[in-house]
Image 1 (cartoon, rainbow, N blue to C red):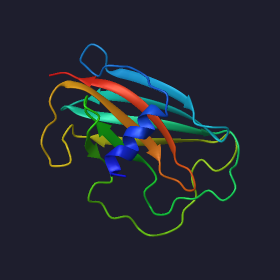
Image 2 (cartoon, helix red, strand yellow):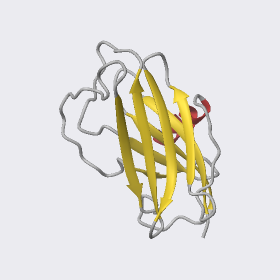
Image 3 (spheres, rainbow, N blue to C red):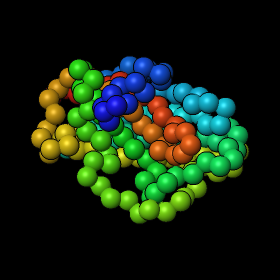
Image 4 (cartoon, one colour):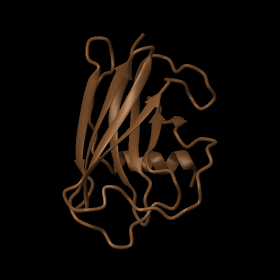
Length: 156
């Protein structure tokens, strides 16, 4: 199965939140109880110079035995266009340290804020056009990842 098809499937298995990132409405939020182990709250915000900030707060609901990060990547953003084609992923052509790491937050009741600043360019450094987009914000843990889907728009 192709990489983009896997993320396309994840979109349909998750909860959607519609929002617009424009000069009139720069904040959009989504909350999802990923499962009994983690509650995720995400937001997309347009910031100066046409950058977009993806934020996700993870709140630990219950400790999950045997959970780990397989490398130093602890937060991933994948952006899809209106045709559900991957146009950007934060791990594209990146290398991460190969080390087993703990998933944060670790303890019940703890929270961790994850952020990623996107320059609104695709994986090939070309500015993306105005339109509707979907982002999957995830903690790429094993044996199961935690993810949240947020729909947003980009205007001139």
